[in-house]
Amino acid sequence: MFKRCLTMVIGLPIVIAVIVFANKYVVDAIVAVLAISAIYEYTKCTRNKFKTIMWVGIVTAAMISLIHFIPCEYLLRYLPLGLLTILAILFMHVVFTDMKINAADIAVTLFGIIYIVGLFAYVALLNGYERNGFILGKLFLGYLFLATWGCDVFAFLIGFKFGKHKFSKISPKKSVEGCLAGTISGVVLVLITTVIYNQVFDLQINYLIIGIIGLVINLLGQIGDFSASCIKRYSEVKDFSNLLPGHGGIIDRFDSVIFAAPFAYYLLTLLI
Picture (cartoon, rainbow, N blue to C red):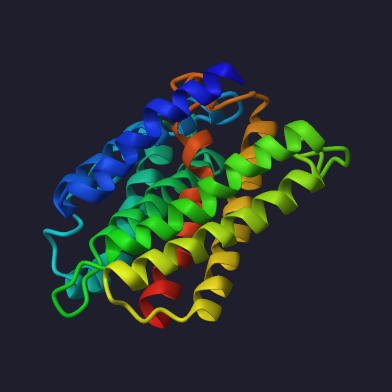
């Protein structure tokens, strides 16, 4: 527990500083590095059972750093072509390795690219969101982290102290009490932050709407946590890596954030 808290104390100010002070291109580069690290962890983890192809995922993850250099209309227009190109490259590995890499291997590789690169990309997109010349993305990114990491913190603390009823075999350490505490705390943090946003930035964010959005993001973040646990249990590993003491790897720390990120992007940009 000490290592977990120490990592949080050191890492949280860094995350806050990046969100507040870094421009969208710097954040894109940082997100790309995180995605590359996550792809590496995912590949090492799944290689217990599959011959996943690491370099394709790494190259794809690196492309996140260019996400705001490419006009949005081109991103939308050529995204299907990009996915088809990745699929073609993966099938070429099957052909040229004479079936030493098979369909299951490339399916797991493609899933990892969608799961990690696709979801991490929405963190960068959310951060760079602008409306009428005002960068709302940084404020929205705050909602994403508060609803997910706030849930993680309180779920861990309350579950550690008062957890009696196990939630799921997928993640044996999680309790019903911890999940409920995390859900309530995440929504409360979002509402408190909205009071600050409305006062400081003279916004008119509706508290009922943002409360519902916060709840949705929170619950999806918890699903993201369990989804990462599913992959670990199947691959028979405890953590994706030991990069972050007390937390595990990049995926272990960002699983809830990236899973909720696409939903946060669309809900916040369309409804707020």
